[in-house]
Amino acid sequence: MNTNHHQRPGHSRFSRALPLALTALGATLLTGCQQANQTLSIGDMSSGYNREIFWMSVWAIALSIIIFIGVSYALFYTVNKFREDKHDAPPAQFHGNNRLEVILVVVPVIIVVFLSVLTVRSMARLNPTPQNVVNIDILSRQFWWNFAYPEAPAAAGGVVTNGNEIIIPTRQQVALTITSGDVIHGFWAPNIGGQRHALPGTRRTWQVDTDRPGAYQGNCSQLCGASHANMRYKVVALEPERYNTFITAARAYRAPEPAPSSAEARGYTLFMQGKTSTGALSCAACHRVQGTPAAGAAGPDLSFFGTRRTLGAGMWEGERAREMLHEWIKHSPLVKPGSLMPTYDGSEYRVNGKVQKGGVLTDAEIDDVSAYLRSLKLPEEADYWQGTPVIGAQGASAPGESQ
Ligand code: CUA
Image (cartoon, rainbow, N blue to C red; front, side, top):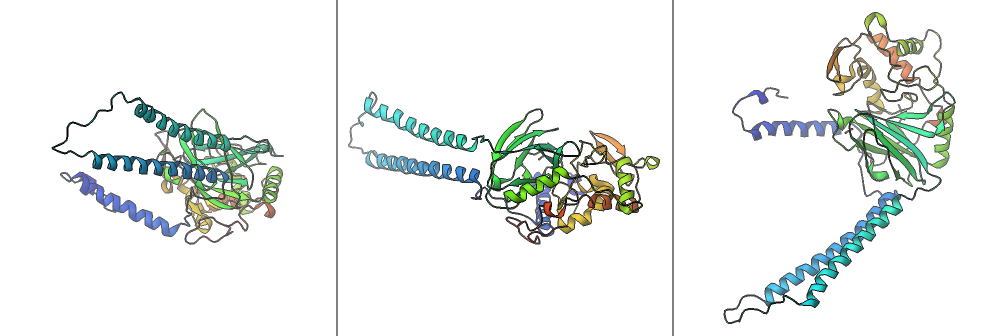
C-alpha cells in the first residue's frame, strides 16, 4: 500500500480517497478469501422473531403499494381531466367541501391506525416474556463479548460463562440481557432475531429464537472504535437435549489440571503469575478460568478456550485461529488494532491513551501458555462444535470442523 499519498500537497480529496477506497475494497476481497465467511440474513425464517417481522412487513408493504396506486391514479386522473383549456372558465373551487375534507382526514387516520396496530401487535408478540425462557447476560467491551448464564451456577463458583461464542437452545425463547462495559456496542445476529444496542450502565432485555440447530454469525453493529469490525461472535444453537448436556457439563467443569512438568504446567504457572523478572503480566489478572484462581473480568472468559473455534472475538476461525494463537499472545494489539491486551514481546501498547511497555516471554514460553489454553476443553459430549452445521457458510469452512 502506498503510505505517502496523504502527504502530497495539492491533491484533490477525491484523488486521495480513491486509492484508499480501492485498498479497502482489496482488503475486503482478500479477507473474503482467507476467512470462512458466513452470510447474515434477516430473512432467516427459522426464527420466530424474523417470521413475525417478515409478515408484518408484508402487510405494511402491501398497504403502501395500494396507497401508491391510489395516489398515482388520483394524480394522473386530475392532471388529465382538469388540464388547462383557454376556453374554460376558472375551475370550480372546493374550499368548504365538507365531504371531501372529512375523507381527507379519515382515510389517513385509518392508514396510520392500521400501521400502528400492526406494529404494536408485533411488539407484543416478540416480547411475551414466557415462564420458560433461557436467560443469558451479555457483556460487551472493546472489542469482545462475554456470555453468562445466570441460571447455571458453576460448581467451582461463579456462573457458566463463555467468551465470544454464545450457545443457545433451539425451539425455545432466549432472553438476552445486554450491557456494555465501556462505549456503545450493538448485538446483531440477524438469523436469530433483532438487534439491540449495549449501553453502559443500562441493562436491556429482548428475545431471540431459532428452530434450526447450527452456528450463526454475529457482529457488533455500532461503530465503537478501531476494531469495531473485529468484534464478532458465533451463535451456536443446539437441540434442547444437546443444550442441556452442554449446560450440565459446563456447570460441573473445572479446568483440567496439567500433568507435572508438562508444557501445560509451565503454561499454567505463566498464566497465573506472569513472569516478574521480565515484566510479563499474568493472564489471570484479566481473564477467568473456571475452577482455577484466575478470576479476572477485564477480558473475555477463557474457561472453555480449548473448545472454542474462534480467536480474537471471531477474527480467526478453525485452523487459522490455531495458527494465530502464538502471534495473538505475543502482541495482540499488533494483529488487532485497539486491543487492550498487553504485549509479551517487549513492544509498546496503549491503555487508555497511555503508552505502556510490554513484558517479555520467549517463544517457547508463549507456546507453553498456548498449550495450557488449548487444554481448557469441555468434555467431548459437551463440545458444541461437534457436528454443528455452519449456517450460510461460504468458502473453506466445513460443517462441524473443530480445532
Ligand atoms: Cu463494538 Cu462495534
